[in-house]
Amino acid sequence: MRHCMSPLDFSVEEIDQLLDLATDIEHNPEKYSHSCEGKKIATLFYEPSTRTRLSFETAMLNLGGKVLGFSSAASSSASKGESVSDTIRVISCFADIAAIRHPKEGAPYVASLVSKIPVINAGDGGHQHPTQTLTDLMTIRSVKGRLDNMTIGICGDLKFGRTVHSLISALVRYTGIRFVLISPEELRIPDYVREDVLRKNNVPFKEVIRLEDALPELDVLYMTRVQKERFFNEDDYIRMKDFYILDRAKLQLAKPDCAVLHPLPRVNEISVDVDNDPRACYFRQVQYGVYVRMALILTLLGVKVC
Amino acid sequence: MLSVGQLQEGVVLDHIPAGKAMDIYKRLKLDRLDCQVAMIMHAHSNKMGQKDIIKVEAPLEKLDLDALGFIDHTITVNIIRDGSIVEKQKLKLPKKLVNIIHCKNPRCISTIEQGLDQVFYLADEEHEIYRCRYCDEQYHSSKKKGV
Image 1 (cartoon, chains in turn brown, cyan):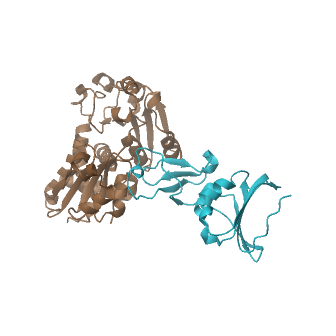
Image 2 (cartoon, each protein chain N blue to C red):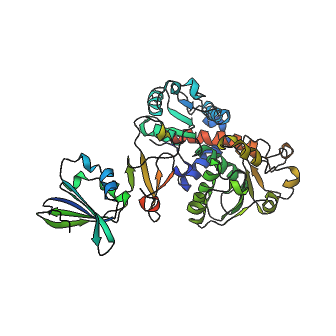
Image 3 (cartoon, one colour):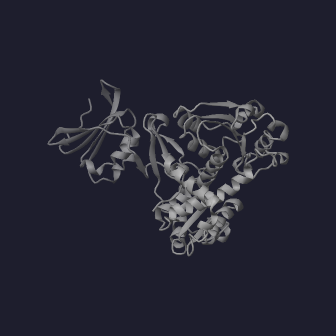
């Protein structure tokens, strides 16, 4: 039985197959609409995340399956002190697959050790969020037609942003990728990503502070939110949160086919006047997230659709 | 000069950095073995200047070599039979550590989940870097940070 804990659980070939399946789902949704009839997904969300939870639930409903679960630790047995291992043992009796979000890093992995059903990590603290990375890869591939030979700018909170670390780790496996890392000094990429991922794989990159300096050379711009919940000090958060704002004027500096992505939710780092620009891909990204989760559910359940 | 009797059957841990023997004694839980243990500290060494030595009158299987390899894989392990060294075992950095070190990341599941082993894996042998199996938090082995 296979689980999904990290985007690197899949080889490049397996990711290609998964994205091919997601693309086929996008173009032929009817073909898959009954493929999970009689199957159930349990969404076990120990911390609030409306977007990811609803995306998983939509994915299963689109496949003809059913959903059950909880959306906060307070409404689960965790509030009575039940361990993650015990919870998944119980849920294994109710559902066919589980998506787990937990504030503690490694909690979905602990669940996978004893689970009788496939477990998907739907985000564990600041650690991993593999389905977001798969969503990002699908968006880039769908919009740009490829995942290689590109200059990718990543802007904002590069220190605490788990989606950033996962995306970089996933993209360095493709040829011809070059990164421009745009962040204030305090939110630069952690050393282990710079050394263990970028330098170790001989991936060209540069670190800059001004978004305007980077924009003209980018094929993809991945914007991120400065996450309040990752700061221990309120003053630091307030100082950092408005550092980068992409607006229509700045976007004029970008290539005409530059794709702008954002894992959402945004606060104010992308001005609403960018939303109607054809380069703004972040709402399409949400839709791709559903397709890629559908593909992942089918793959982990071993359901083949002819 | 201090004289410690010859070991007939057992294990001699040699070339322990001076002053570290007590720490190794505790980490290997040698106090729980029902056998004689001799600890010689700050002995003369041509190679190291000073060194510690531990003699244990017990078979090798009683010692946690993974823990010892993690603490210092340059320590020499001599296996003694009939009063002579019959084998010198080289220590390696273990690929996996179970319940030898603890994760210090307050956000790690291992801080709250009951009955969960503390598991680390060797992520970078050259730099002796271990990472928590659950949260990937980095832990440098003894040579980098001190045990």
